[in-house]
Image 1 (tube, rainbow, N blue to C red):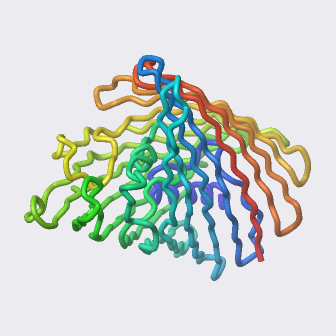
Image 2: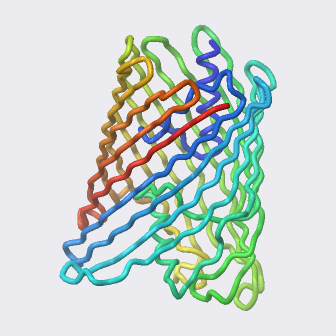
Image 3: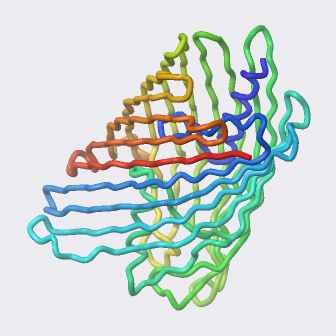
Length: 398
């Protein structure tokens, strides 16, 4: 029962704080820290995409190296504290297929520091609280065309590890509850995320800043888990977003609605079969976003460049994991991802292939390596997309 409860708690907490659970292959296996009060790890990640449009005769290249770190401290067997932060350098270039001489544009900087505290109040009740410290990069260099790079980092077709670096203060509080009945473990959770107003630079006029209110998010999650050798787990998350507004000088003398984002509905499901050293996982994820609206459709006075209409997403994946020895495991994953717009028209389809391996080098030290290769079609098959990514995670505990 404790195993099921722990799995469900972890899944609910992840859904509440990030909007999705890590059902896919690019998740590290941290070391066993049951008897260790402190663990620290970093996951340097390289990601590269190439988009070739034969109609426009252009080739877009994007590359990002991100170096996040995480420190986790267990104050007791019921209370844990986690600090996370990320640094990234991103490059973008758009070239004519017959002329490859254009320079690359670069955006680099440090991200915000995030603090999360989890406390298991009862055996089946967990409280969660978090804070975002605005330590990251918020201003952009227009002469270096950093805004052009930022535009592509927000494309959810590409799933870059790090998008926006610096934000304002943010506070959230939530709870998760799990209960077992007739062999089935049920869980529910809720989270309230408040994001404070902060000064943000206008991309089309870098000398001006406005007060930007990114809005508030309210999340509700429910899920259940059942089985032992053959396990089934599913989560459903519903996220409400309040309006984003701006207020400043000139055209912004009065508060202006900047972006209206409809609610999100996320369904995560997983079927797992375990037999001795072998584990098979069939994974599925559906993200449905209600219509989003940006009042300034003329694209004037934007604070940042984000998709006007966010994409719906469907992902299916099959993962095979095999324990090759007492200290090592290897897994391979095949994933199919489909993205649609608000009119349910296909925007992109991407197939990815993962290879991950984990090594327990010693009692306190673990190493995880991963490689991903992707290819697909974008914009009604007008462009071909290909890419690769790799990561390495070294974990240790004290």
